[in-house]
Image (tube, rainbow, N blue to C red):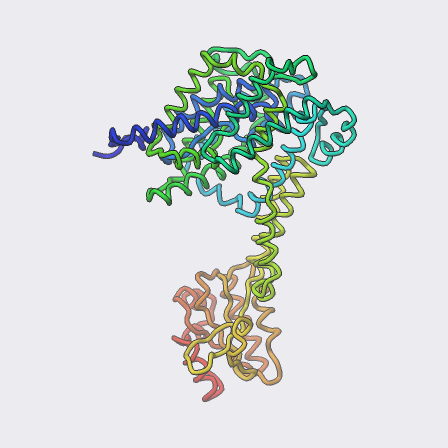
Length: 562
């Protein structure tokens, strides 16, 4: 029987899986509750909104997603993007809470449309270096926004540098008791993560902070607390915003969808590889879209797949999305009966949970790896091919720090696309030499022992030839000609495709070389080149294609021409 189109991970469910899913659900719930409260504060709404988002998002993703392990819910990156998007509109008199709900719905609708129209390839527009640069910049910006809560000083709006400068200017207003609570909470979360990774450090820190408020009378000593949290289930329905607000949020929703989809897809694929099943990107878009739509309809905020909570889920023994449904049920219980427990939660502890969640994302290692590649021997040989990733990552990082999250993301995507186009227009054209005692023709830059000749030069373009790079390849080959050169062998083994403009270029190159007394021969083309050369009127060139570089070089060396 074909698997059901919904709740696919539950098809053929076995009773022996229940214990693993139950333990995983309890473990993820212990992590999700404090983090959902914290991420809602990043989004600039009441902490309970983070809990509102979770149940519907988890249920809808379980119904429509393709991963057995992915956990969806509020996340730091999408929460920060949500805050930035809503701030642009709420500053004009809009209700931030209602706009946050509307943003989740718009993101959800876009995800559904993208999935149904099979636009899963959109994830490829955020390259890994762009995502790394974005995450580092975003994490630094989030930390800069949360440190004032640790110190008990007023925060400053704006980009990373504005927040950091405002913090420095307010250091003299630090509240000692708040600093102690925040520092101890952060140390507790990080310490448990280091020495007892299976213990939910965030939940322990939240419980300790809540208990400390009445025991030590912290509220009377200047420690700010979360305050009243509305208990009960959220109201269902559409937010109280106008159609113009939905339209105004659409641009931001695209960026949020790309980020959430990219991060969630990476997490889903990680565990799918471990458990030997496949992920459908289009179904992931539908699952993410349905999760956000469900969150919005239940007064929640934008959600996305979480790598950290998915790792917790998988390591705790989850077998299917039953663990996510258990988390959803436990979150509903929390909303009904446990919200009062969180009213005494110190703001400094909440900020510590946020900082602990994102601080591990601030790592120089991804950029260091890109820089080492840039300065390596391969970097010298391939040049631009190793630089584009580093440039894109740094551009995204700087864009986020200076221009804020959404502009920084689109700067990174834009720079990445431009660099891809620039890189494609300047492919590496290798000069080949023959390795001694072998039949192999290799790049002389990578193999200094390879023997090449100024008499018969062998070159290999290492990319498809098309209109954007044809002139550059032509110019590159032309610069190799010396007074000693009497033949060029063009090895097309690494050319998977060619267009009409490139065929015209080869015809022009043949004419140019012939007029200069130099012969041109083609070796190892796949067939398409010959077809297009015939159409371009270069049949004589196309009819003299050699099956190997050796045969071409031998023929040219023997009689001076093909």
